[in-house]
Length: 533
Image (cartoon, rainbow, N blue to C red):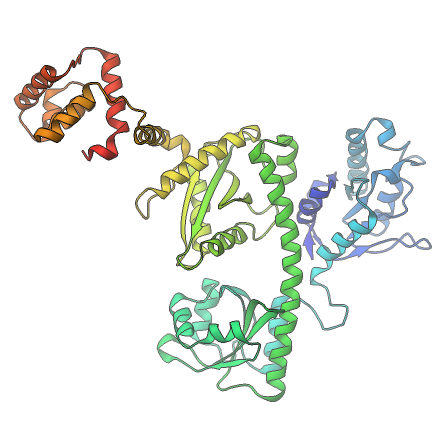
């Protein structure tokens, strides 16, 4: 089962466009129909108009079937007939006119019209549509619903204990309504949507995770009253050699006989569901990533691409994120990407892509605070051991997103060099820090003047232990106010006056020249890391 907007977002990568009936975007699609030659009134939320003579036929069939939407290939409209048509859309002036006609017909009959790219075959379209829409239907072998919550309920009824299904990172995917055998540890896990760190450490010490990684055999986990844990039976969910997750059942002792077999069978069914869900999610992520990358690299029609992603034309920010964990940096970044792209659809505020070692997200956020909230929410969903650094570009229109990416990269580098726990910087708020960072990079590369007042005074301070450079900096920052400069240096104003006089004897120090004052201020800022002032 899938909403229409989510389906459109996935199929949009294959040239499918939605025309008309915008209120249908949030409606759920639970069934697919393909009309038979003998009976055009097939029932289903989404009708594949195979064999329709034109748009009029396709929309009428969908209206008769009480369908929410109809999928039409434009080439099928070339022989449109009757009062609702005319000739084929491409022959009448191209795609824009065809889309207007499709929207008008759809609005008239209360049906959303999806126009497919003629280059995509019906078999390809049908395969994607059936896979996405029927994801939560019964399996072909009749093993029952693949919905994880329903599966958890069924397993709990058979075994007689509370069931929790988790992914390989100990995040909760589903749980049963039954609370039989439930305990505080299970409640805390469900409320937090993941196993608490202290329980993970306990299970790690007991070798539970090592067992799950090595074998498909269920294992009993004894109770631990100090952590609110009653007994558990747990089994790995695996596809081939890959560990996908685990199934946990509350029980007083090890399961045996039919109950143990039911647990093993349940784990295999969960594996099928996770594989099916991952295939669907991976397709969505691929489509989304490709479009986001094209926006960030400036290699696309920005307005059209943003529209396909459901992004506004302006007020966008690029967020650059790096996630790191001591045990596996690459796994942490992939986990962040997975979390950023979970819940695909128009309800999710950002659109994301992985480029190299960085996660980029394009987000509608006029204020930097909204982008920081997104980063905070992302970090909260990751394991505690994962460290996150992020940078935020300035507000931009879609055509300016390549520049926004560069801004986010600079802010990310600034955040990575900042103190732990610092707030992710935004370009429009931190441009001065970024400018100074560039100047310091130039200084480190030897591109600052080796001669001049600042260099001469610095050498004198190094050799003789004087405090001329700090004095010059304090005087410049105080805009020539001797009293304020003296307060900064914690000396008497006369001391500042005497130092300035001696500095003028060592090097030409024209403090009345505004250009020289500016140049010395820039030089001091560029050399700040080396000066240790």
